[in-house]
Length: 501
Image (cartoon, rainbow, N blue to C red; front, side, top):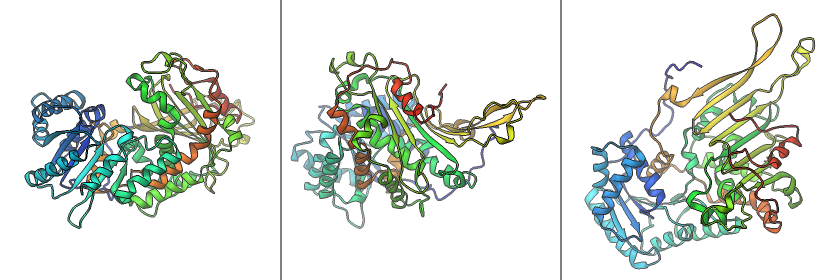
């Protein structure tokens, strides 16, 4: 496909600088802040959408002074955002970064935060707008907002806003997610809560809606009449690395399916929203989550596959007899008019053959009748692949005649790569999400009902797997595409996973 620069058409995008605000990061000395949040803030400033009236207050238990924290910020941005050594934007950010050491469970910590925020408001003209980011262990997700509320730091007035960003995992099952929602809503209004999923910060994920609804050639065939099935793959080459303690408790099902994977399912399957306003989009996503068939316990054994890679039990902080799954494959069915009888096959795993996230739409085969008197033995179905990571783009596969006197059909791919058409911009996946938090756009964030509906989908699988621990682990080699049972899941339907090169 030609790499001619695309004509850029402005739609109803925001195109404005974020609101003046102070971002308070709880867990400011942790890995998420170091590798993702600080580089994302740097990239936002480079792109011109960071307000001048801006400051960051880091809060963590580590004892350090502000000069030490600022030195750390400069170092982290250079290492993880690729900033130059003589970086004026690094200096600009460092001048607006502050630090407070404190215990997240101590009410006095929040009084000190309140006093400090009032000082920063005056110094940086941030107009009382506070964004609280919980880059902490999940055990603090309910406590920190509650303490903020007790200190009077979550109350909104006409002239300013207060918002809270909650990282995943949002609960560990349906009941815990529901309890966490209830706790948050004691202190905050739903519009103040931003449940973040960094996958939704990726360009291709956001582009699914544009691709589907801004192009008249795709939406007419985006239904059961033309689509045979959908495959969603979220594969990682790496193992659990330093997350063994968390991962051995969570597993692949909890870690990936209720959030990342079901978000991809909803964006692929949802009906056109009446607008791109946050609740209009999320209303349609929620309808899909509620339409996904909840598996009866007896069907879990045939519609859900789990696996564990060889060597997982030797990872640091992992139980040497662990039955935690590092791979999951599911066959999901959506009970609505558009998707009746169209299976959605999803899989995710660690230590797989390649790092790759994609959505593959396989269309129904064309009738063979026209080619019965030719040497063509079969017609390959058309496939549309949305590549989400590591290389973002779209591939459309179709059949074309091979030159020559015989009628022979070969497969042809038309490839669109974001980098070729629009250039590359440094990104951690958090830039768009932080920006949306600063302007109050919750479109890419989950509502309470969506979170609970997602856990409701995986609940029966959790229950059956808990009652019947895996006996054949480990059951796939590191560097493979998962256990044989995942292939059998599709083979029973006379289908196969797309071969990813």
